[in-house]
Length: 173
Image (cartoon, rainbow, N blue to C red; front, side):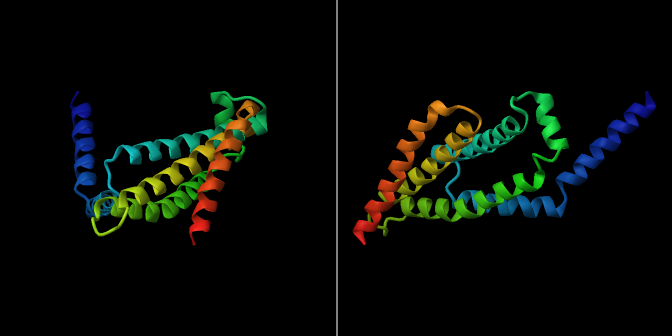
């Protein structure tokens, strides 16, 4: 009983040290600044983050389907073991999305709150819409790679909408 209490106290001490570590406070502060600058919490941000998570999961699902023909939890673990799924690829995918999306999210948020920006809310909504379309397109492509070929018309429609947004903006120039 005494050993168990000492182990609990030691575990609590380690958690306390971790919580009050300088690096945790610095990382928390940086994360807080970034989140406040992109306008968190907004429903659209939560939606975009949810789409990013679904995209990452659907990508892993499609990789397992391509390599093994079906998806089970054991095949998922086997995919990691056989290096079909790697932490490097996952990290690269997340980092690319973060570095590409943060400036867009920052710009969209600033356009929506600064009164000096003419049509700021409209610009903000367009930027959010483009991010949502990009993520939905990626999710649909992953699903089609997994064998859900019935989704091809929806993917074609989304790509057509993306092309319309880009071509409409080019006509204005």
